[in-house]
Image 1 (cartoon, helix red, strand yellow):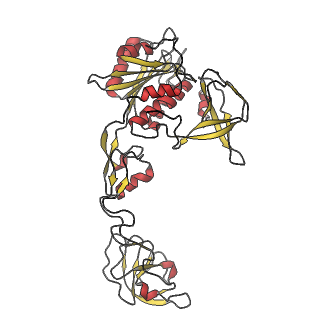
Image 2 (cartoon, rainbow, N blue to C red; image 1 turned 180 degrees about the vertical axis):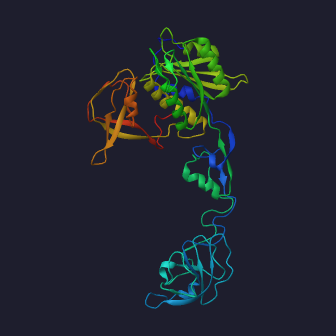
Image 3 (cartoon, rainbow, N blue to C red; image 1 turned 120 degrees about the horizontal axis):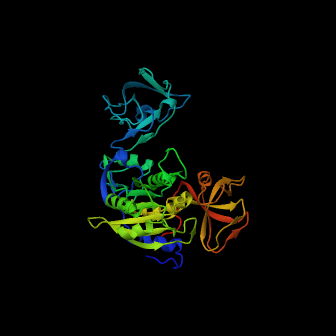
Length: 432
């Protein structure tokens, strides 16, 4: 076990050790309606050509361009309407010289037609209307007007999405359009969550004496989902090592990562570090960040020899949140197959307040973000910065970073802020 007198690790050094042997989880086949938030484990190629035929980009009339080459508003061309074709149906007639077929958006272009004139450029009524006998065309058209050629999107066999693509909502539809009902994605990591402490009570329970609500386990479950994992509840363990060890064993058998909050410092009842040594081993302890210095990380193996990552986070809810964000989130995202291991946006903001931090550690301040009249970001402290102050965390939009070795910053100084909103710029840079 790491000695208490060893120097504190930097965040980057700790992350490098944590990620040194972590790989994306194996691929599983998932139905398309369950893909959101996953990462492709195999390329998606089109199973058919899109569009599979020439179709109409507009509601209007399918015509021969040669018939309407001279059409204007002052001198329209009148054509006989010989039918109608809607999306999902085949035309029952062909466009012959002097004729037109009413066509709806997405419908297959009928034989003989090579252009579509918008309904707005005719004398026909828009919307639901009876099929007219004739239509006056008010504008000229050339071959290909308002026609989407077959294969103009993709052709059968084309690459639609490459392995490693994050499946946001705008990409899931492309998989279906390419002809797939399932896709191969990296399995979402299962993250077992254990709270420890005699003082903790389940959410909503009536409190008596020195009891407090177990907010950390609920917050950690939400963070796991936000990072792309599946939370597994291990409940609340009392300050009793056999109870902690038994619950850790359950998590090791059922999850890819086990996260315990509380019990990792040097107090007389801090049993988690010792319990980690019973079920596996500790690789590092204590990192040079504020809040969250007492952070335990180790590894264990289940009965089949599979390796499981162990995290012991501080018991204070703000410290637990921040250390999860900085350390557990990157591991979850690596296991889920993400290339960007953080998935957060970094903004450069001016401090609205003077701040003072522990000079020996990199600080993460809970701040609110706003833009001034020039569009520049301003970061204001979101309430109290104590590691027990959930109200400040709840009001925050992100974490302002005060580099190690500085200690004090005046109002107006620019800092990086990790925004809690979605984004793609990873911070900090992680060495695989």
